[in-house]
Length: 387
Image (cartoon, rainbow, N blue to C red; front, side, top):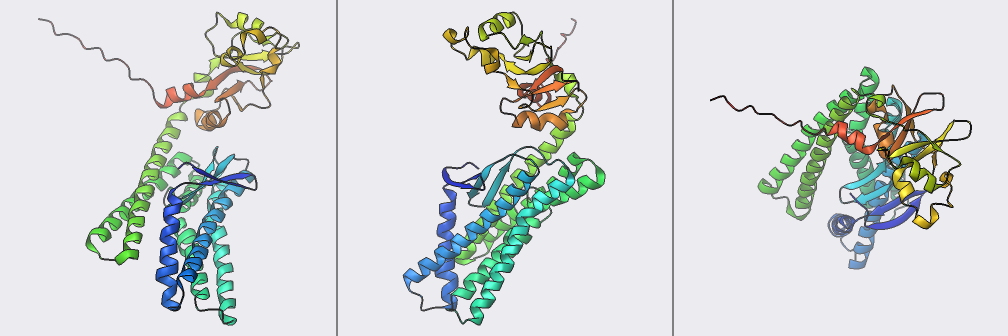
């Protein structure tokens, strides 16, 4: 899901939402302010119902945001890039890059979100107890209890169902990964459970929609159950495909698909001289060495060609070089399963392959990874019968 409205940043993490949250907010205001609270306080005015419904809705959305922030902050603590948080109709999503470096990291990142909601549930429960002790208006305690239920049952325990892509599925994946050492197999098990749970939610939502008269609120819950099932089912199938890709990538080493570096470009050359040097070469990326013969970085053909003609002579090559310190790198005997995410997350979709002594042996780019995961079918040769 993509952001259409930017809300700002929290702890440096971009936060956004899209149009579906407006629909969720209207439904929540309607339920909280005009269906739930009037049961406990029938004399509420229209304005009071609207305000209390808005407060309940805001508390719900902030609880979702806190859940996703829990994931994002713990992931960032493990060095994973966080592209942002998006709120939408079925909750929220923290957009994390890379992969967890260990089962322990996977477990903690997954458990952080529900853990935050458990703490919030305790806080709201304490506030409800205090409000009752102070004899607050009749609508206050039910509103706080609703936030307890949302945080404890929906955002905490509901998310801990052990099925991908829910947080509980990530926790299960971490536990199985630690036990077996095979992350792809752990993802597969969690994904198959997710497919089962998603199918059950979808069918249950459909059954209630067509065979149970649940009234206005009931219909809203039934539609949400159906959409949640479709969402879980769709992402669980993606997780299953992801596991299959990991198993495929582990069969290849970086050396088996890397593009060997051609004669290196010289750091003291300008852009025009560098283009003349590579004009007859088929490669798209080139290592750059200093006067001692040590590799200092990588430059691509597209970077060189992007320089205007009149600037190529005076511009030194070093202005374009991406230093090895700034690049993702790997060794020739690493498997693609271990390095593929570095290619996807690198700014130029390119990583350097080294030999451990500071020399660049070659590079791997995104098209090379895609070619392994989606090989072109070999042509079929059909023999004509002899007559």
